[in-house]
Image: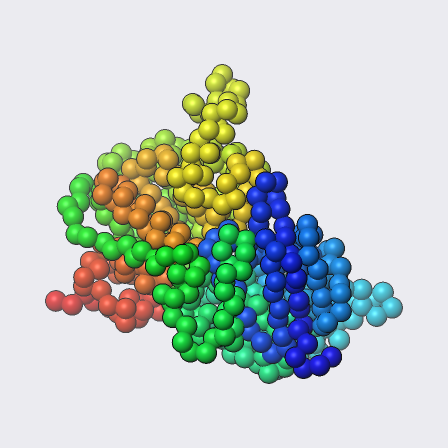
Length: 503
């Protein structure tokens, strides 16, 4: 193969889902040692295109070539055999098995036997070459989110992928983990691996890519060399057709406390949490991922039971809390795990839009679902929130991660909540969708809703919050007005250091 022969060539790719055209006559090429950024709004067709390359979908039209040779990719097994690996936005690992068992799943081994020695040697090679190491004996269920994603990347390389597709690879990573990923990508480039980098984080795209391909509404609208002249604003205009809006928080009068936590303990031995959120106030919860934020949100939302403590909404204690009881009290919850905790991927958008209100009017009467009411509600929300593809009958698992997030936001905000718990609200969203979600949060704030915002994005926390509280080891270790907070001080508290608001 000549050095300039593309590792992967997609020509004239078209893909339809019913009446929706997800990809429209798309051409795409990836060369050895090249990192190509694939950009576009949520629903622009980026992930669909790469799912075709990885064998998850079959194109309705177009051709595929691998290393210059025509290829028919009818399954992920075909793609893997051709040296194509894909790391999805949501990790695909088996929690009850070890790292090594996850890596070897599906491999026949020599003479039909599992070859542990060869597998360990291959794992060591990957660690040495790319800095992507994991203890082979660790149980995957004990890995942090960033480590699980590293395992997905290692698994693709374990199968000797020469094309590596990364879909929103840093959406769940800390800054330090992102730096480690970038180091690995640079080593992969040196080794001749081609990388497709799908992301909405434009700073990262500009920092790591050699070339940028931009899609809009299923078609390629730009293919530009990353020569140092690309700007975030320019890329955003190519993606959206306009400059993105930046939502800013303005001071306003808050009301009485709508959410009160007293002596809330997330587990045995954890410190008690006392926190109040007033009506018309956003309290941002900052913290390094894995410090109890998920348990904190789930305990307030009634998904899990706290070890101790009281939760009050509008001054009334909610006893024996459950998701239904908390919802009836006026609380809405948007979890960080969209598909795992917020949606049912195999159900249509219309059903997912009313998941939290099945059995209630106007969607049910005398125990019977009102499909017309469900469809009408879903269509309104799809239009108001610009959910793509705009088809309420599609299984929601076929939507992009960003559009799944918009669907959850649309569903929960329709409840007109007194209290909103929202975790990682803009993870995986494009710049237009981020502005939309931020605008909705500001609207709720203005209407007197008490909002608890949990985010790994410090910029987002500082941009939207009236107060910032830091969670460390399942406890709130400090809280202060945003005007008194500094990034350095909050960062110190996130890592267990003491911080005080300036006098």
